Length: 501
Image (cartoon, rainbow, N blue to C red; front, side, top):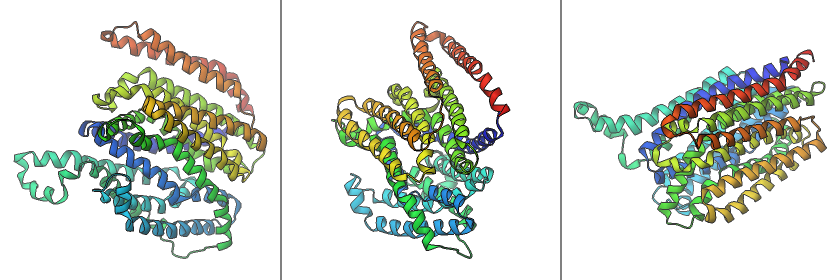
């Protein structure tokens, strides 16, 4: 394999290790939450984290990507870092103060009049995470994935530990007479009536710990701030707010609209939202890989842009990215029964039918992220925003129309259609402004084979009795191995050529 691809693969693996290990730890919260909380209560968790995804874009306003871009353009990288960080510090403090002042009206507006505390906790989480965004970006830009992974794991392990403490350990101690000596202390820190609030409190504690861990990166001793550079960075970054917000509309709006558009009682709507949110998590492997890849790829692609014929490298990495995503799709869907039994409670099983749709949707989203390099390298972030806004409009219109008719299944299909069309549009625009020789035919073959093998498994397994569950898994292994064999046959010659190049 070409050394550049090896470099990207190794960094993806390290970022992936932190993401996978961390997310798996975090993912252990899903079986915990879906067994402690009913679907309606879990719907509250799903809804608030959807709001956070939107607000996080406003709090960081594309400054991470601008930092990567100008770190490659400016010789004085400290000046770029200091300018980016101070900008985020100022805007974060302003936003946090504004939201805290109006926390009660905001809580009332989103139908949580008795829980302004949720707004306060999440505002502090958003503020702390926004301030640490540039330090984390610096670690990526400096190719320090191990240090990056360590700090990320500190955050996630802290979050998981406090979830376990509040949701399992505290109730257990209070219910155990032999541990009466600890009841007084537990009563000081644990209030059963807070319920899902402890999910949010645990996250806040984790964000505080992360801030303390990154202290020396946040509080710079000698600032080198350049106002002219800041204006350039803001001009580059601001269109990315539209891109980010539009992306969050595509990804999370359905989890907000379900509560308002389902034609049923509020309790039943939250029940449906909880099921959809839990089953969305079953596409976690695809999301993990895409997240890890993006963390490694963004600084890698910017760095490669200065070299001869970087388009060739971008095309090859897209090919390997697509192959791996196809493996993930097949792995999850061929063994979906095992995934659902391990990771979600039985009362959430009815929503598993959305998983193949969401896996493909996230696959297309990952391809779209790869394709967006064209507007980032040509400074055409405005055109990138147009594509993202298109996706947001599609998401809003079709979710508004289909949720009352098909419920969360309608949302799943809208997500797939949105990401698929954005991928196609971005490919066509990219070929005009920054042509890259992507192997479109090979991409379509791999996707077609993956979907075909999945449908074959569904048809064959319909004839296998449930008592012969081991045959289900055996057949899945055969199909997955068959796909691996086909990839080997297709790619062997190309890998040899790539090594020579």
